[in-house]
Length: 443
Image 1 (cartoon, rainbow, N blue to C red):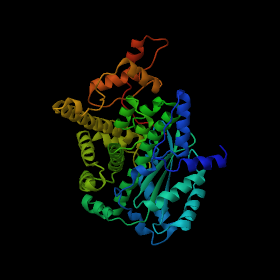
Image 2 (image 1 turned 180 degrees about the vertical axis):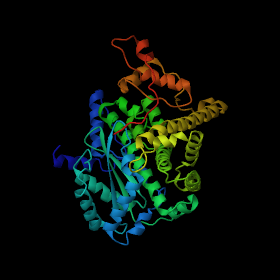
Image 3 (image 1 turned 135 degrees about the vertical axis):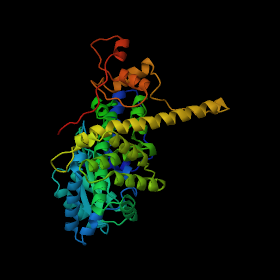
């Protein structure tokens, strides 16, 4: 499309409430949806704004100097291992950059700051629908709206690459002081926790964005997205029941909470591994999360305590995460331990929710108006459902399974197993084996 056509399409798609696509050609529909999503600059950027991070103490070192603040943020990012965490993915490559700026900047001043950031960041990826000037324009739009460190992940022109900008302002937020007081940690430790948290969002969002892009462009999710084990269980459920694209793109409260758990888990594990956090301080962070849940709904406290118990039960796991090189931990090893813990915890929660809905449905006196339980992972798929999901996932060679329900694991393995040449329907649906648990990977 030429610039004029792009401008007309952008004007047409300015904040649409609903877009419907109709037609009998499935391939045409998929490509049109992909064009619409590209024009909307497919992004998870606004999924993560709130008081969760509550400011960053590196602002104290700025002393009003923009350059000094940028340097202090960059140093804090290095100490936290943010770059290593952000790139701890499996099917995508993430290009992550911090954007440090003053909360007092606005309008042309902020625009000039963003332009300088873009020009000084040669590895910054352009989004799917423009050059790096478009990346800068979006940063300039969201920067004044946020007060806390904020990870904005976005799709690039390559299906296997995503960009991520961690915005850090010098805005003062009282909750940050509350974190230090409740957890018993100093400002530097709190900064590392916050930045590691946001960097983990870059990694987890990256795989989700890639999966959404797959669906938009081809109607199928590439198998390596599932193998990454970074898709939350609710998103996986939507894929399994072939939910429409608008449902896949919808970021529910539960899915936000899932992402927060992964980010918090990665942050505390990386800090435990490099000796920057004690178990008592981890418990303090969990207490702080429990205190703030009514404000932001994150709900990571119980999961943090679950990770504490898992580490206490097997103290050797921290040794496997350590590294003699900076920043003192192996991000891939941390991810290898965290992902199955995260998936199993979320799966148990989802199974409990399904059970409660089922009980409510059974107890409803009026069967015509009963509460319908959602389709569960535990139920057996029909032949048609299994075949449909198998086609969508392009018959992946290997998938990692986590969860306490063996029936669910078996059902999922049936639709993601290898397909032999010209198999019978039964063979196509039943053959294959489960990939072993995730293991640390370099690179």
